[in-house]
Structure formats: structure tokens, C-alpha cells
Length: 188
Length: 416
Image 1 (spheres, rainbow over the protein chains, first blue to last red):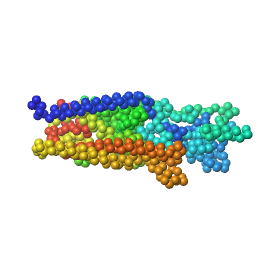
Image 2: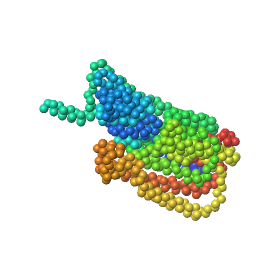
Image 3: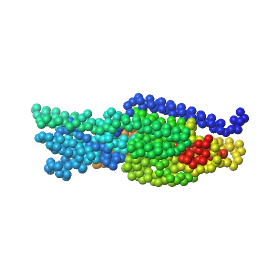
Image 4: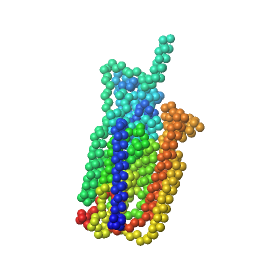
């Protein structure tokens, strides 16, 4: 008893054990609550653009953390009208419907146009050239069927904890989606 | 008559199904729709590898530091961590950022936290409770990167280090405040090393990261000691950890470990010569007990008055200001944000209600945050004013990051 009184280590040790117990209990209860919470619902993991909310503002091109945005234009062939005068392919009020650069909407020429049969043309996106500026999607949605729209390419996306584009997206179209539904496609 | 009707139905169709202005073409040449596949990375696999590696590396560090008392494996763990978690996985998922997901999950029931994110948050804490900050030692790619470039450990004076040591706590409090109000994930936004790992990104943060790395050459781990919010959290648990690095019983007071420590966690023997009567001591403790609550109240009041300004970090609050301005003086050309707001049928009444909710949330949370900040600052000041007698060299468990550099220098290492 007397020895204990003169030994400051004992008190320190006692406090440390108390601390360990408190910290251990805190961690255990926290883990219990959170694991139950994590398992109760379906966690959303990837970022994706809801095409029904997107307003084609063009911030996807400029605000991604990557030098070239992970957001690309995708094309739903089953929604497309295969028009000759395509609002996504040609600028408004073009004189001639040819592939001259001044007529094209896409600044990098990433939309490839292929003749199918009279009067239909097939459009495909050259992903390596696409910068995600959404100009074609805006044109297609204003004048056409809206078959050109923007999606986050999951193989390019770094899956940041907080998407930098989502922070500036004016319509709140960028949201987390579960792993099984990594793309929100218009032609399912 | 029929013509008008058909035009009317066409117009109606166009209005309802805006997406189908042009009908699906009937191909006669037997054209087939191309099958487009969009790549999805096998994230489940990589997440599993992440978790296995996290636990394995922490176990290696714990074994080599606590049991073998050697640094060599810790260095290689650092290299693996920088290569894999840093450059290969590009720094996400990260335990430091996971604080924000956990804070958000605690206050917001609609948010489901991914299990891997929570495990990245809790596993290092469990290991810290058992073995000290083995996560910091080399498993965290941010700490490992600074550790690898470190050459010399110039010591920063005690009071400067103590004041700078407040920053991680303030950072942690702000990060939780902004995460809990769904405003912003500031830890991710101001991560100085992510740009280096990704070889590109925000140029300002990359410059800051490079400056930190240059500083890390001359003094141990500036980011870990003076910025990292997760380190602050772990230091709470490492104070009470069960197995930890201990000063050897055969210590000969040679001060070599003290000089080797990059984070200044080994305190030399010290004799407190100030004699204090019992009455004086009681008075001093009473003073602490008065000063501490006063600082908490001051902190709470300051943060409460600032809560409206802080709430502008939330997107909706900024949008609300734009909407109000536009309502007062309608602009001819709407900004992109306003266009989207009105386009989605947003009304002033609806956004006002939303913003009021956000601002009241901010008021509550920033009051709590202010209290905690007052507490942290008060405790730091008290810590600076308290002087304790130490008979031998002592390890400051809160600061020690288990890098095991001291073992290399100790002449008595593994002798007892």
C-alpha cells in the first residue's frame, strides 16, 4: 500500500488501462453500428451522370481532375434517328452537309459518320478524341432524339471520394451508382 | 379535319416524348445495330487486394517494430505502399479521406457508406489501439512518401511544434463539419500528394505537395505532424495502445534515439526545479478548470456567429444567393446554374426552405465545432505550461509513428 503510494507509475498505468478500455469500447460500438449500416443498404460506389438531369453545360470537360476528362459522349443507336441533318454532328445553319471542319459541331472531330442507306447515316463516337465538352449532346437534345449524351467512363474515372465535377454540376446530375449499374444508358 | 387532328396528335407526341422527335428508321439493307460495350473495371477485385495489403502491411510493421525491433522491413513497406496505394491505385480509397464518409454516414441516414471505405477507416484505428501508429509508420502512402525522401531531421522548437500541432485538430473539425453538412470533402480537395501520385491535377496543390516534400527532406514528416487530421485521430488511440514501442530498460541516457527521431517523440530526462506548494498547485488546477470552459464558450460563440459565412461552402447556399440576385434584378442571360435551376422547375420558396435547413444545420454543427476547437487550443496551452519531471528518456506515444528509426541508433537495442 505504502509502496504504491510512492510509485507514480501505478496511477499512470491505471489511467492508461481505463483509456484503453474506453477507446476499445468506442471502436467496437462504432464498428458495430457502421458495419450494420453499411450492410443494410446498397452502397453506391461509382460516379455517374443521370442523362435525364444533365443540362450539357460543358463543365465536365473543364472541371475533371484528369487532364482530359473521364466524361465522354456516348451514343444510344436504338434512340438515334440516323438523320442526314444531325443536330449533334452539324452546327446550326450549315450551308453544305459535308465533313468540312467548319460545319462540324464537335471541336475535335470525334464523331464518325458512316453512310448506311438512303437517307440514313450511322454515328459513332471516337472515344480517344472526345473531350466531354457536351456540345454534340446539347445539339442532339435540342434538335434531335437525344441519343448523344454524356457518361462517366468508369475505366478512366479515378473514382475520387468527392467528384470535382459533381461539385460544380448545375443540375446535380452526377451521383453515386452501385457497382452493378455502373452506366446509366438510354438504350439499357 | 383529319389532317388537323393528325398534326395535333403529332404535336402532342412531340411534346410528351421529346426524346423521340424522329422515328426509328426502317432499314432495308439489313443493317444491324452495333453492340457497344462500356468498360467497367473489376473494382471488387482491387478493393479486396487493397484490404488484404492494408492488413498485411500493418501486421508486418507491427511485428518488425514491436517484436523484432528493426527498421528494415518498415522501409520496404513504405516503398510498397507508395508504389501500390500511391502510384498504382492513385491514392483512393484513403483512410484520411474516409473520416468524411464516416462523419457523413453518422449524421445522414440516407447515405450508405461502402464497406471498404469504413474498413479503411477502422482497421488502422484498431491496429493503433493494439500496436501504436503502425499505419502511419509506412502503410499510409502519404507518410511513406515523406519518410522515403527524409534525409535529416532538424528539430522544430517545442512551442512552435505545439502551436502547429493545433492545425490537424482544426482541420479534422472543419472536415467533419463540412462533411456532416454535405457541403464539401475538404480533405480530398486539399490533399497535397494526390497530384504527385496521379502525375497531374490541381497545380496549386501539386506545388504545395512538392514544397512539403522538400521540407520533409530536412525535417521529419511535416504533413503528418502539422496537417494530417487522421494522424490527430490516431494519436488519441496510440496514447492508450496496448503493445507499443518502449524505452529499453538498459537505457544509458546517450540521447542518440532522441536525435534520430524524425517526429521529436522522444523526450529527454528533465528535472523540474520549480518548487510549488500544495496550495499553489490547487490554485493552478482551478485556473485550468476555469480557463478551459471559457475557451470552449469563446470558441463556440465565434464559430456560431461565423456559421452563415461558413455555410456558403454549400452549393445550394451559393445558388440561393444567385437566385435572390436574379429575382431582384432579372438578368437577360442566365448563368448556367440559374438556367439549370429554373429549367428543373425550382422556385424561390422551395430553395429558401432548403437553405434555411442547411443554415440551421450549420449553426448547430459549427457551435459544436467551435467548442471542440476551444478545447483543443486550451489543452495545448495547458500542455505547454505543465512541466513534468522525467527520470529517463521517455517516448511520447501520441507523436510516435513507429518508424523504428531509433532502433538503428540505440547501442542497447535488443539487449534486454
